[in-house]
Length: 262
Image (cartoon, rainbow, N blue to C red; front, top):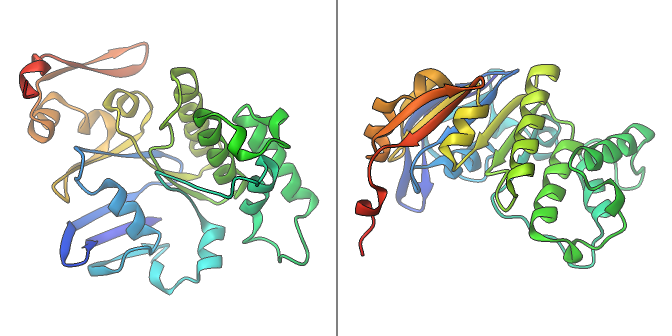
């Protein structure tokens, strides 16, 4: 299990996370939600060891993350940052092959299994016919799906994704979230994803962590976290939550125009 225990972290002397404790369940789609600046992306960076902790501990199967080497960690956790970049000349196929670096040496190269994983990942995101295309020639949505394919091809048991459906149109937003939820339910993977859209989180998440000002405002099964009372407290917005075809829907009730200065 991936667990954060009383984590304090931030940038320089500015603490963003203030005593965050949460456990991410395997076989579940765990979603982080909350207002801008509440610490969602910071928590993911702390999990990956990109930020030093001022307090607390992040552990994987009871072992501190900080004690796990980078290559060994890459075999366990695949990470999709909010913004990703690569050289313009790199092709889609070359990008996906980077996903296997933790499994093979640069001299040995990818195995037949690795190449199968690369093909399956591209097929899952609808880019199987574009492997020879330079990344620079892809649209913003195609590039985002390319990075998602790279994460899938890493074949780690834990996927940590910061706004994975950013830049995607509605069809691919639903497709990607159905895909990662399927990886959790069918393969037992642990999925941790930041989602900005409350309705997407309500519709697809199994477990939700609501952050507010660097602290956990609520955590648990999505139906227990995504309630009118919690959302009103965290987002200062009155909403109605109801079920539609097996999915939760969040409908704002307030006149949102009054919340935005003219």
